[in-house]
Length: 373
Image (tube, rainbow, N blue to C red):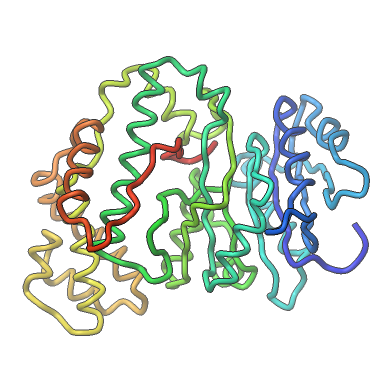
């Protein structure tokens, strides 16, 4: 693709996605700005790897004339011909297109996801406001969601509302100026943007067996890069139950199909306790050690003191969570509870402690609670 370098490059890994890719490509080719005018300055690179079903042909055939979309094919070698390798290859290709000066924005989505018309503009708005990373909302495609069995659809919606309520309480008890309410809980490859500088700072996509998108955001947090969960940038994704990864939305939906009533989540007391523990650790980084920190984390004082010496808040939190897990007391005090009970309790807490002037309650809008693949 010739011409000046873009300021935004969208990376779309695709393998055997002939059934979905045309809708994705058409949506990406039709991005608009805040005024509804065609968005300028972006490109889309669809990296089709190791496919056998005509994905590349379908993708190329869906590109409107003159659209800033290019479809390339590549055969990834054994060991890299998986979701992690495909994501890395697509994002590295996009990073190379942005150039060597470190400027520009990388955006990731999936080949079975359909972005909203202003998706890129909304992700960019979060970055222009100061974030290094923008995580957008991922919703199930409406028609596919409607076809889910009623018990599965019910627990999906309960879990969605629960995750939003948990974020609202967490934002109140442990406010993050870079990620204020309203926000959400998702940071997955179907809807993710980050500056090229941030991507290079963490060395790109981590070498993990699965959940490479979660691992990437974790690496960004270790460097205290600013992560914003914007509720305005949206994609709709498929509701398939046979996925391409060991852990993801497909496995979650399969679990709910098997026994929707068995779903357990952290209760309201645990959500509040964890938010309070993280807020206390953040305060101790500037104010110094307090004996109450060990009580909040239910962890070894020595390990928490060591965590406080970490060079970044992100690393300090990671170390504190590891210490909490090793102590084993947290799980005893906070056993998981049915999602319906957790949601009711969270809503009660939010009503009881509503700030002056009120606060918009979380809406049951169909957010996906796990990885979008």
